[in-house]
Image 1 (tube, rainbow, N blue to C red):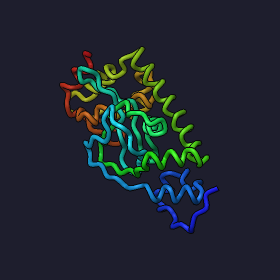
Image 2 (image 1 turned 90 degrees about the vertical axis):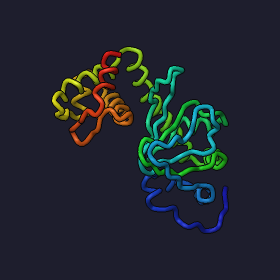
Image 3 (image 1 turned 30 degrees about the vertical axis):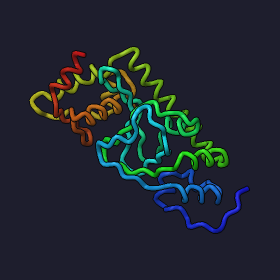
Amino acid sequence: MWTTPALDPLPPALLQAFPFLSELSPGGCRLLQQGQELRRYPAGTMVLAEGEPCPSLLLVERGHLRVYKTSETGRQITLYRVRAGDSCVISMSAVLAGTLYPAHVEAPVDTEARAIPASAFRQLFEREPAVQSLVVAQISGLLTELMTMIAEVAFRRVDQRLAALLLEETRGGRPATWSHEELATHLGTARTVISRLLENFRDDGWISMARRQIQVVDREALERTRVG
C-alpha cells in the first residue's frame, strides 16, 4: 500500500477528459502529479519519429495526433488518430516494453497533451488497476480499428472510389453535401473508413470540410488518387 501526505486534487478538466484518473490511489495521483507536464504542439509538429525511443505517454486533451507509416517511396498510410480523451496505444506498448517507436507521430492541428514520463507510467501500470484496465481497453479498440484498415487495404481501394465520387459531386465548384454515413453507405464500406480517408484528404490539403459540406481544394491531387 502507498502512504502519502494529502494531495491537491487533479485539475477538473483533466479528470473530465480522462475519467480513469479519478480511480487512482493517492500514491498514483502523487506519482502522476510529480511527473506529468502539459505540452503544446502547433499544427504540423513532428512529435515522434520512427525508430526513436518513447520517453513519455501522451494523454491528448485538445486537438489530435496522427500515427502513420511511410514507405521507401515516401507514401504514407495513417494507422490511427489519437483524439482528445485518448492516448497512443503504440506508445503504451513501447513505454511498457522499453522498445523503440515503430511509426511516426505528428500533430495535424494545434494539439495539447499531458505527458507522463515512461518510468512513471510503468509504475502506474504495475500498481494501479485503473491503468491496467485502460491499457486493455485501448488495445482492444486499436485492434478493431486496425483490422478494418487491413481489410480496406487488402481488398478494396476505397480511397480511389471516394476521390472519384468527390470529383463528380463537386463539378463547377459546388460542395458535396454528404454526411460521412451517407458516403459510407454509397461506397459500401464502414463510416470509420470514410472518416479516416476524409481526414487524410483534409490533412493533405486536398479538401476542406464543414458540417455536411465537403469542398475540393486540390482537384489534381484527387484525380491522381482516383486513377491510382
